[in-house]
Length: 525
Image (cartoon, rainbow, N blue to C red; front, side, top):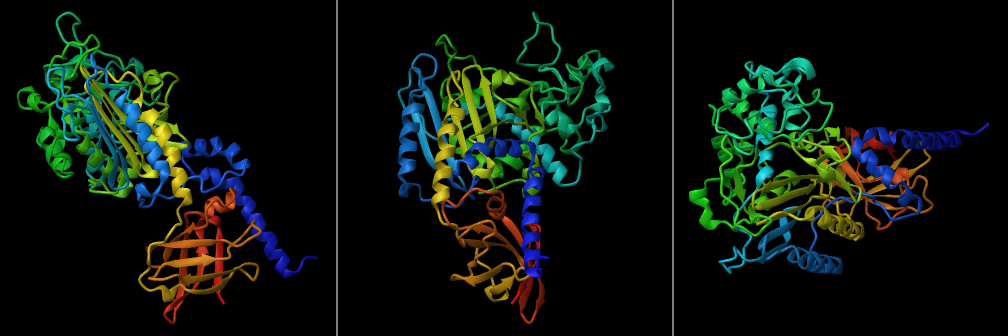
């Protein structure tokens, strides 16, 4: 018959086994896929953490970044084509700064000036992010539900119901490319343009009245310009006097200090833009998308896209709360094979989403006559890449860059010792604790209120140290400080685990729980 200590030890390992079997249920589909992709790597004892926590880095101190940035200079400069793509500007953002930037080629075939980070390009579908930000801002303010039917705000919107009713389409469906709406307004192919529509929202609704959806809502990923323009118009009609452009200018462009971004007006912006070119080398015509404007009628610069990227990484000015940004950066649906030429495995709001080197990447590409652009975000790594080109993209430059950049940042971050955010009064936390006599841990102040916890070594033969990152009073997160620790379920879940301190008396906490690992009841000795 095992004694009490042996029973407690057995309980610990039973809990660890339970953690193992249930851990995957705690992550979204994309992260679960990433963990499955990592299974072989883990079995081969590759060092952990699998997903290191981003922290400030001096890129000049690591040779890995020298190699990466040299490769980026060589590769992106090679995308310049004197005939059909003479100007390219790009940057790589990490946390709250641009860590690499490149300006290649010339402003036009007749202007030899090199472009700069402030050079203006048309950004096409990157503009679709603007009406989606509007939706999530209204949701954050409690004015709409993401799952409201769009007909609640546009009762005059109807479709032929044979493939689905207008009432079945939610605001989030429209924002996420799963509403089943066609790409463009039904039009006469000989008398009207496919890429521009000179009409009103009411005109659009009249034309859709006898049109079926392309698929039942939420059953298929379908790219649509019509949907985003309609979303912007419907929301503006209900909440900002019908003027979406003015709302976006005030709440996005001015709020984020994007000085070279705005609604496209040829007479005003042509002189400041890199000239766009078609496949054949002819200058691209300048045209207004008119009613489709919110879906692609904006211009911007690489410097402004860097600021825009940081707002989603939550490392600079933001216009949404953390909760809203987290919701906006979620995957919505696994798309059918070949969607957008294979550029997206998932659809988001309004993102095209993929896994690159195990990280979920949310990107938005813009393709206009004579211009192409990409903004690609890696939220879990606080990394983003932006590129603007005065011609067709030719290849998926953003994907290729991130395939190189993500492993470099992950490798460097694995080598950096984690330092916790200091607590205001470390005395409340420091001391020796025991887990029912089977596991003893010590919490110390390593200096300036930075807490460390040592000797929590379940399923390991040697002790290791964790930095405790201040969250709120009585709440800290544990991050393993040691570099290259072995990959197993317990250590991976311990890295980033939340500790809740309680039983506060005599000016100190006398108990804490490790919530992520289901370990409750570490008592002060």
